[in-house]
Image (cartoon, rainbow, N blue to C red; front, side, top):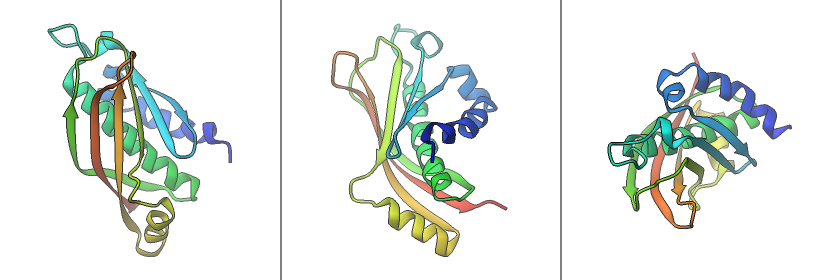
Length: 152
């Protein structure tokens, strides 16, 4: 399966969401395990000239949502995906464009998540996400629980 082809419908969904268009969010790369998204600082700047905390949180949240959506698409499912809860920690101010990456929590397995979804029509996954500083280090990190439900 062409991993970049999976991004096409997700890009269309994101383009239809006004908050994501305002952020100028862009899906960058999906390697089958991690999803990378980005947004320019100019569209997400606060009064201090750094990245707005809500934009950092939103970017990481959407990276997790997109990752779960893509993993289910890879398995042949079209699902509704929601963030159930999340915790965000802001570590350092970011003075450049926002680059976030999401991945599955190491204590969770995609195979179990997909199998549960297949059997029950719903499943939960714990994800991690970060926005990195260009010089190294972490600007913000998220731990979130996402829920997928059968559409309809």
